[in-house]
Image 1: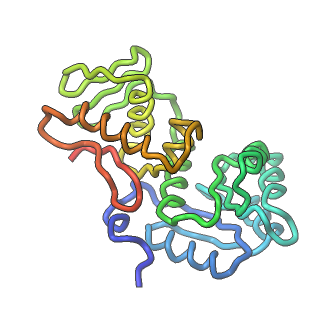
Image 2 (image 1 turned 90 degrees about the horizontal axis):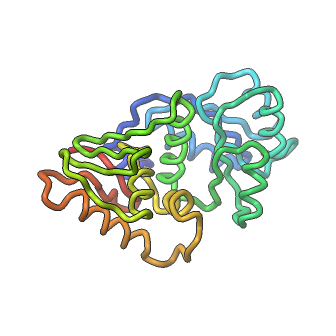
Length: 240
């Protein structure tokens, strides 16, 4: 029986990843291995920090998913040790500790992203895809294009089919983030972290309101939709 929701089975990531999962909860580790494999990726498992460190230090992984609380060697120690060895592989930290200070500690230890348990697998998948894309991006782009939609970071302008679209600062930041991750699911939590910096109550509908306004501006009067809602997961910017 498939673990992935139907919406995600229809979305193909453009690169097969080799992923190391360091997780001592066997049931959770097996679930991740099955789900990530269904998404088309190769997954290796380690059940403790020492084994995970050895595999990571001798392997060639695209992304690592590391539980913070591990036997023998905790997750932050694993990450710090790898960074000391010059390993720059992107790391997503998993933890039941979800306070701001906990996330800051994890990121300062060398993690690239931090996801609090319990989590939705769809969000974990979206986050590791973002990390992989970021790691393989050699240059900082100043112009993003998705279909006939174009955003210029330097001139702070947006055009679709050569028609200029005027956006408010927050709408521009929201669109820029969506365009940077075009073709992949962006969750509400990712928007909360990267566009709003946690500066509002996550239970409010501020994301939905801004997405609705942005969608109206970039779609009204044009031939095809470009900002799509992925049911139960988030949003995706893609040309149809």
